Structure formats: C-alpha cells, structure tokens
Image (cartoon, rainbow, N blue to C red; front, side):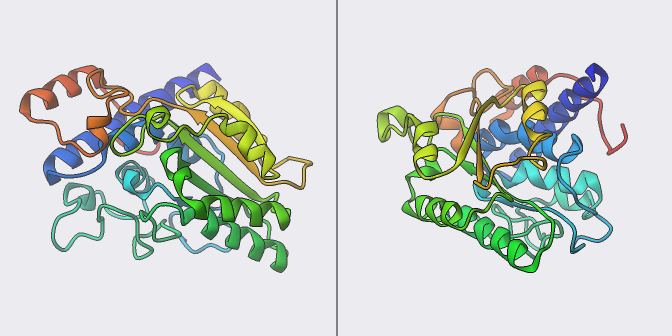
Length: 281
C-alpha cells in the first residue's frame, strides 16, 4: 500500500512539472486549478479506479469521465498522453497552431468524453450518460469533476435535481473545493458553504475527503462501484489551488497567470526531482 501511495505521489509531482512546462511554453493556461485537481486525476487514472482502454478509446465498457472544470485540462492531457491515448509530442505543442490540445477539452482528443470549459455543463452531460447506461442496462460509471466556483452556475443545480429524481446511482461527482473562483475567494464572492448540506438537500449522498491525500482519495474512490444507495454521489475534495508551489497556493492571481523565468525556476525547485516519465515507472 505504501509503495503504491509513494508511486502516486511521485506521479502527481511529475504531472505538475509537465503542466508547468506546458503552460510556460504556451504562454497561457490555467495552472492553479490544474494543480488543485492533479492528485484527484492521478488517483482516478493510476489508482485502479476508472475503467478505460487507451488502445480502444471508445470501448463500450469504459467509464465516462467528464472534466467539467475544463480550464484545468492541462493536467488531464498529461495523464492521457502518458497512458498512451495520443503522442507525447502533442504535449510540447499544447495550445499551439495545429495541435489538438486546446485550452479546454474537446471530443476530437482521444480520451475526452465531452466538450467542456463553459462552466456548469459537465454535470448535465454526466447525468445524461448515467441515465443512458441505466436505460440500456450497461454497466459503467459516469464520473464528473466540477469546481466549487462552478457551483455558482444554476445549471449545476438543475442537473443535481435531475440526477436525484432519476436515481442515478451510477453518477459520481467530484467537487474540487479549493476555495477560489477566477478572481477572488469563494467566501468573499458568494459563499457556498455548507456545500455538503446543499448537495444532501438535493438528494445526493455526500462524502468529504482530503483532496491531496492519496490514502483518503483511494479509500473513498475504491468503494464507488459497490454502493448500495440509489442516490448519486458527490465527493467533496478539499484542495488547495496552486498546490505544490508555495507562491501559487491559495493565491487568486494564479488562476491563469503564467510564471516568468524566475518564478519558473522557483516552481521547478519546489516541485522537486520528479522521476516518473511513463505509465510503468
């Protein structure tokens, strides 16, 4: 178990380093939100949680993962490339002319299930996928990662009501609760707490988890396929925006700022010597 946790931590550090280099090279991107959800994505894709097949991206038995907070796509791109969905050369051309990897996910990219980035749409897409699975009697999970700032969108709560009414127990929401939106702190902009009670009042099961603890993440994620409840599940992951780089952490300016040369050097040093370069390393 501890060897596995160490492997995931090292992988997460490597992903953050790749994201840093991608965004600096492109001169644009959303580094803060990508860093806050990196551990969640690593746990899902490398922790044996999601069912997927990079050699057959449209495999019918795959789980459908929707990155609703699409501005954090850089972290997901690194992972999908590492897993073999597309060439690593795409990573070096992130957001450059002719590259399939734009600032937000698109279904033309192998491994991407929905076009996202206009916030508030991902949960509705996931609910539709989960309902289709129920109707067709197909056994897959629809897993949707949303942000806390995204919960300002009314469409999120419309989807929440729909999912509860339809008893979509195969719909798993993960809420990256980093406490920041694009310009300010959630509590100073429009306070959302208590978020857990809000989701419960909409008919969802709710679990709170430490979003940077692989022990906690895997403990919760490993049970999502074996639930007895007929309710959808929302996992509220408490995270830190900009996680891993001290001057970025919990700083609203790093929603879409790009490090200068000196900041890049500091960030590289703080992220450390991340060894992993491939799926099996």
